[in-house]
Length: 389
Image (tube, rainbow, N blue to C red):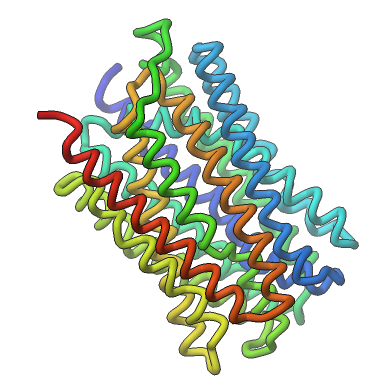
């Protein structure tokens, strides 16, 4: 495989992520507010994260299928079908007239995202190897966030100009969705053979280091509030107008974009120590948000939320590639995603229920979860450092 084709594949996958994020992050920026419009309660808004859980279950399914069948055609089949389901479901939200139908479409969108992610990340791990995997994943995440900022901006402008017409706003997200699928074809044409399955027919094993890291991230996710619940709170509290909910998501995505490449660059220099800060930052998000008295506090909470997501989407994916053998990466990404998603869902359902009782309960819960996450993350970093003589 020539260097030029590998580079074209990497750039094409980055552009796919830009366009895909423009589609579904635009959707997610107002999803909690949309559910409030459709008559859902705070608990139902918290259940938006069930879609996240199913997405991560499908990461496990996608990882298992890719690891078991071990074929380049299977890998790319999972990537294409996942993106198609993921992207087509978003503009269909324009037709949803009630929250159960909207929830079904959200779940379908997350199923597609989960199905394609392990195979896509294996390809990314391969094509970024020569450039420095941390920098490669960092640049990919940066492109993600260009789309994640552009999508909510489009949504914000649409809501502003149409007087909060959510149906029209979701419909226009069909354009970047179709463009993403076209760019995915370019990536496949230039990198049709996945090296991990073409060079070996046997899967590798997952060691204690992988499991310790997965537990640390699961604890982190249990105290990390989902944006659907953030958007619900912002809508129900009436601190800011509807279109500003999308604006806050833009702020979060800008923070994500700002840290993505530097985080990846630092990973190539100092390794997993770069993720120790994430539980501390996640710990600060909920109290900053729920105790907010004006827009400045909400901006700070959004920035903190985006930084945590930026480090997670960059360095935590790189760590999986480093602690798993090439042959076991599909399984590793799938299992990791499954456990992370289950914890995130459980945590947000708990936070949604606690919020209906008292914001103080939510803050206390978050502090406990992230303190445990910090201890587990520190233990992982020590064991990673000592894994070889």
